[in-house]
Length: 287
Image 1 (cartoon, rainbow, N blue to C red):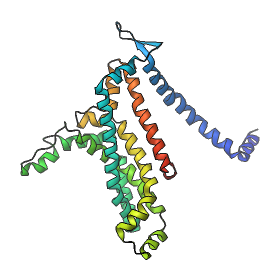
Image 2: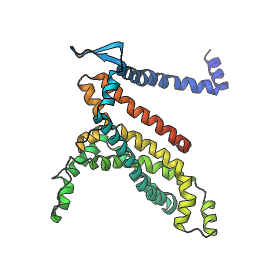
Image 3: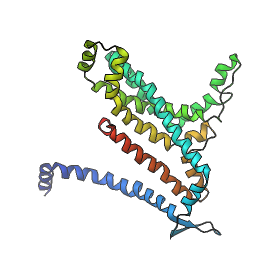
Image 4: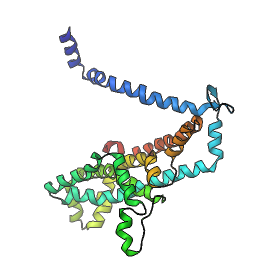
């Protein structure tokens, strides 16, 4: 019996793949997608004005009306999306020269060491890295101690730019690695042809290399943008700014589940639009 089953799976590789993925995909569907669906359903449920309890299956759009009528929510959404875009742009600006040196200039030994250096921060705890930056950025922190001889002070933990800096540091490896892979896929014959036609360094980069890197940059931006737009720990620990995640968390803690669920639609809609845009740039082929 076992041999028959094994032989059947050997003759049907797609069925084998489906059987292997059935467990993990089923678990994701039940635990992740199921919990997400329940959360989003809360956005359409009403809340008793006297007891403060959510009334399931009592459908209403009051939570969306509350969000749309309050300009604070628009400000927080714009701030979060703006910081996520800035993190993506700054990560791309740093990743391009680093990845180019790794892929085109560094020797194999240096390339291996640089790959380890780029991925090493991913081995450290997420919270440890944030608290390390908190120690650096606070008024009497390491940065303040380093610049105090010049009569300057540390930025403290109230500047929104702190979130930009820390998020860029956290998600930079996710931009460097796709760009490095994209540079490795560019054939040397293209660069040689550009040189033969008189193209110098900047012209070759602008007309030959950069267009080939757009899918890789779009692939890396999916990680930096999505991880930044959903982060709520960094702005809470290194700055006083409120992001979308902080508002969702605060409303959930206060029992305002309809408002929290309604505001959860903002990053979901933004990410769907961003993924569609990245797909047009060929990002999925570079992942």
